[in-house]
Length: 200
Ligand SMILES: Cc1cc2nc3c(=O)[nH]c(=O)nc-3n(C[C@H](O)[C@H](O)[C@H](O)COP(=O)(O)O)c2cc1C
Image (cartoon, rainbow, N blue to C red; front, side):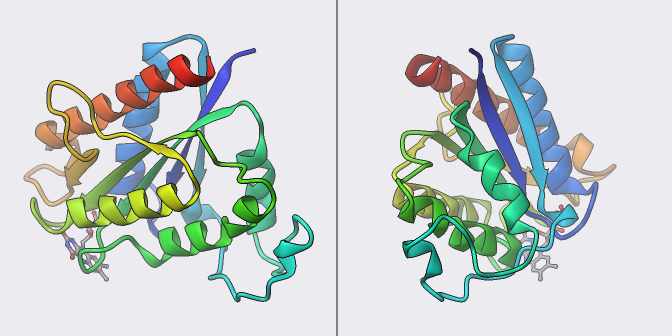
């Protein structure tokens, strides 16, 4: 049985820079190994509110909120999932509120057997400026992944920094951020390589 790596796009905007970055990352993963399938969850297409801390998911693996998160749960709980790559736009040096809501709602998976534990986690951040807080946003994603007991990686050798960092306001658009694209592709290869070692 093959393994699966899931990408989460956390921009409220469809088909923009964050989506471009995660699409390129998942494409790189598919090119890296025919044994890995990828799947994208674009939060711009889902309505996922913040956690209300009702506590219901301590007793049952269900969320009390009637929104689109119920469609996401089975995609993440799939035992074939070996890795998760979360891509966020940088908002005030942080992850987007969509990204935060996603992680907070995933507490349901933690409370029902740590279902994300040992999955390989990588992060991508896309800012409006070159150094607009991509690294701080990535570190927030890493923190949430650690609380899920995931195994976090950066973009691997030879660059080996924090993950994928892109800039959408480069002349000609995000597609022309060739430096950033390299980090996104390297992150994909790093997550794919370790996912195969640990879960393949
Ligand atoms: C509320 C808000 C806050 C932002 N704050 C930052 C920031 O702190 N640093 C930065 O580089 N870009 C910032 N930006 C710009 C976005 O990160 C940038 O446009 C990004 O590409 C958006 O991703 P998208 O094209 O997928 O929507 C901000 C944008 C918004 C709407």
